[in-house]
Length: 106
Length: 118
Image (cartoon, rainbow over all chains, first blue to last red):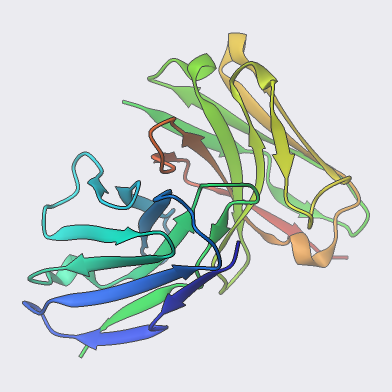
């Protein structure tokens, strides 16, 4: 299953709302997670199964979608949110990641 | 605290072998499926191996199939990745991750770095 993530990069300012998307090459039945990665660190799970907020993750992060199209929304961007974000389908093997969206400070 | 700690990385020559270890603590390791994920320098993460609880199901990415073997020791809360016939393109940070039934890879180790070079 191919995961097409867009945009590859995004510039925003603190307080903005941003969206990024992942499109799967086939129906993945909602088995889609979003991960945040900062330089030199392991990815961190934010959202699992399309829209479930991982424990400890701020509520400004949210996920929506179904079938093949999924969106991560970050409301009221905070300085610590500038990072790279990846989607991952865990519907079937091989699990596949999107190529990432780099969220940069404008 | 639920934690995963990888070890065993290092410099290895092309064609050589290496065994990575992942030590789990703070949760019932035997109840969870586990994965190995790697990330080459400047690239995104790549899933490479999965092992189910009880070792009943194992999957590999095509890029490592036939060269890498994943295993687990539930008594000692350990997972392993035996790497053979390594190539330059295996150079990466290797992470072990927990794979709960509800979805998402919710616990990650800090990673161990493998460098394949002569």
